[in-house]
Length: 145
Image (cartoon, rainbow, N blue to C red):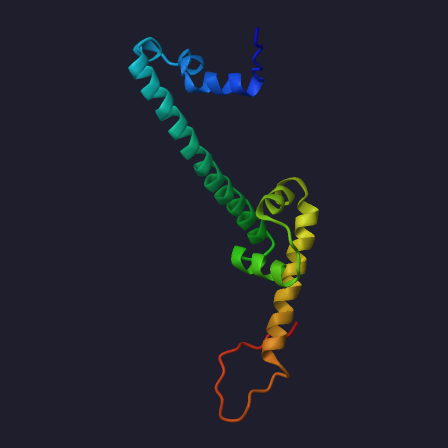
């Protein structure tokens, strides 16, 4: 007599090939007629795959909206805020920044102040010593900080 070994993973693969475990969630003929059931299960899997991608896009847009709203409260637009944080070598992703904006407003305020300072340093570096070379017309507005 020969014994065969069946692992749990192989049983799971067999169950996944047969849509029976997924059918009970459908209504009407979709859980009783095999052809309709298989079609419904495949569509459900395709939709869930697309929904996972859409969820990532939606969450990124939500994080950006939250960061933008919080940075506008501190006087910075979103692109300037992010670019100045990158120049300051702050490597926080958008999810963490959005969470800081909601749950740690003082920390976010200090990050906004850091970005604002970096922005002002960039303006002062662009101005140089405040004198334009001879014969050059500049539209840079001189701010005194």
